[in-house]
Image 1 (cartoon, rainbow, N blue to C red):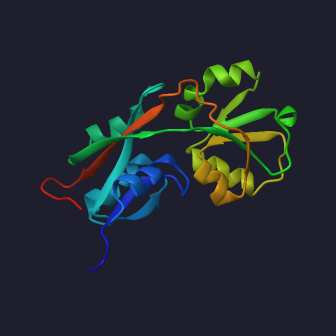
Image 2: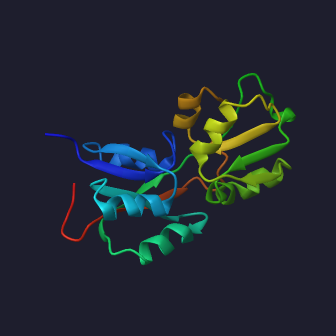
Image 3: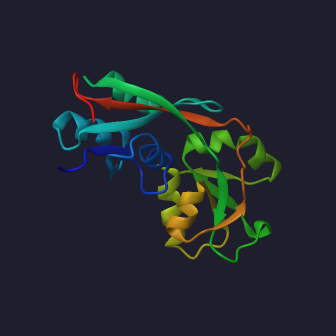
Amino acid sequence: MTRPTVAYQGQPGAFSHEACLAFLPACRPLAKPSFAAVVAAVESGDTDIGILPIENSTAGRVEEALRVLDRSSLATLSERSLPVRLHLLSLPGTRLEAIARVISHPMALAQCAETLRSLNLPTQSAVNTAVAAKRLAAATDGATAVLASEAAARTYGLAILRRDVHDRPDNATRFRVIGLPGEGP
C-alpha cells in the first residue's frame, strides 16, 4: 500500500514541512509553491490531503491561506499548533556585525519584529522561510541573513547566527489539515 500524500507550501525545512512530519508522520510530504497550489493539489486529487498555516500566536492570521481556503470546497480534517522557533541564519563564517539585511516570509518577520528592530536590521520579504534559506545557501552574500528553522539550517548548510529571535517564547502556529469532504489520510 502506498503512503498517503500531504501537500504543503514551501520547501523542506519550512515550518509547514515540520508540521507534516510532526502531525502526519504516515503521510509523504509534497512541496508546493503557494497556498493556492496546495488547495488545487487536494481538490484535483493529486494529493490526498493538504496542510496550511492559518494563525500565529504572535503575528496573527495568515490571511492569504485563509482567503484561499474560503474560496475552496475543502473540509477541515483537523487543526494543531506547532511551536515555532525562529533563528537568524547566514552563510557559514559570517559574523552578526556583517549582516545588512534579513529576508524571510512576512509572518516570520512579524514574529521577530522587536528583535530585528533592536538589532537595527532592515528586512525584505520572501515567499517562505525555507525558500529564503535555500536561496541564501546558493548565494555568496555574506551581508544577508534569513529567519528560518533549525531544520532549514541543517537542510541548506547554513549557520545559526542567533537562536530564538522570535519576540515571544510561546510563539506557535496553528495548522489546518484539509481534504475533500468525507476524506482523510
